[in-house]
Length: 582
Ligand code: UGB
Image 1 (cartoon, rainbow, N blue to C red):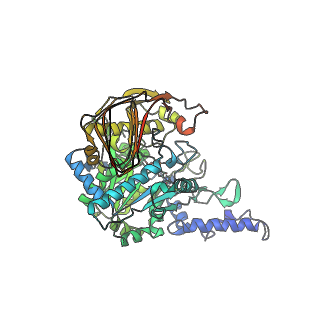
Image 2: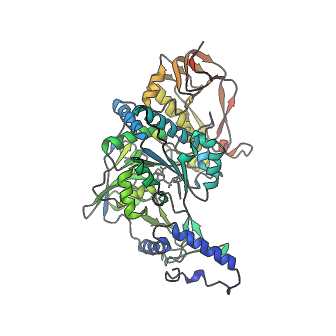
Image 3: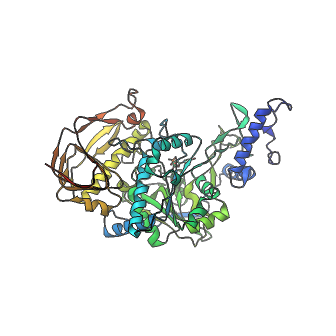
């Protein structure tokens, strides 16, 4: 097979039989793996590569013939009646959903040495992203079942796509934390394989520079999730369990679950086969733009145009300013946050045709303008949000736009790169990711009727951010806005220097006046009311220099830590009614 595809060079240096036989067997083991993990096998991979490399050499634009325009979608306003009723519809549907987290990326831009899902989402509680995601799914599961009454015992499946870079650490994180309360059988790990690197325009496979019996490999991208799900048999299993929705999400967005119930509500009420979550996008921000593309032959599609392609596409189609903000101060193209909700039935039908193969691209770095040689080997890549590209025009493809403060705060950039982000654009750093949690929770409590002090502005790791009161809660306390509103009663107020941790289900703020740090832990059967003042020295925020290696990396990348001077921590371990008042 390899010889037919003109890959003789892979064997040219092989010594006679009997020499290095184990290494030669190892080579074929790897070939077998590369062959079985790509839809259509290595022959397809090489042929696809030849075509894409020829297109790239010829300077062919993948968007040739397409004109971009601004699409229209659902725009939600947090907390209004429509939002509340969509959240209710979404929670009801959640029992029919399955969640898929793509977590195979190395996080090169962040440069963190561990896996990103193990990073604290915020350092007031120190809970990591994965714990928050699992607790959110479990809360949805419970709330959804409650809505339909007895007889509902569904366990929402949770798939994590890992790669060789993240697999072992992800499993270790789950196992050493008892799966954060989820039943281990609910969690499925699907490991993506890397793909072969390409040495030249003829798609000759590259050998590993350190091992002549090994083909060099690199990640193929998050688009692998579709073929892995297809070949795992999970989709058919979910169909037999009458599941309806598959929700895909990324590794470090601590706000995402604020948006899931209402977005799922949109999918269910609009009957969308594909629903992408989006936020207003600043021009040149490193998130794709959701765009309507109209071909000269009349075809149209609503699809993500990746951030590095939006500007050239706009310039080539009569927009001399390219990717620019409009009068609103934002790009007119909503920003894709790569949270996709797919309707399972049509998804399976499509995958039966494609086997999960996703439109690919190649991005070689050429040595010069003749485009005959590469600076280093390249490979084909694919993105999960390109799934709709193969859908027929009859498919219902939509998107849902939410406020950034509510729905999107990824942790992607290291402090140095974040500090260079143009003023006004989001940093997407560990610093901004954590501060965004406090901001969102403060704004949500404000909307629920509490008085939350204004933020102060401070600078950490050379990034200027708003510092709001450090308010966090467990998903079982506040899954939807309606839940939260029911638990914020009377005239509660929280000062700027305060921290509040709510860890329990039935905790009510009934005129709590917090000026300091309050941590509440309560079992589900306990009903706890807080009234009157809680005052203490609280936790102060200390600046930490990114380069100060005496601090842990998790702390250094955010540029601050808390000094826990004084706090009130209360634990309710017994069922019944309790109240804490001054
Ligand atoms: N990932 C994998 O699981 N496997 C891989 O091989 C690669 C990545 P990045 P990217 O919302 O902020 C995406 O690197 O690709 C996982 C969208 O394409 O963080 O630059 C990885 O673990 C873009 O349109 O992002 O940009 C992580 O969970 C925009 O939406 C996820 O894939 C942007 O994200 C994303 O990987 C965004």
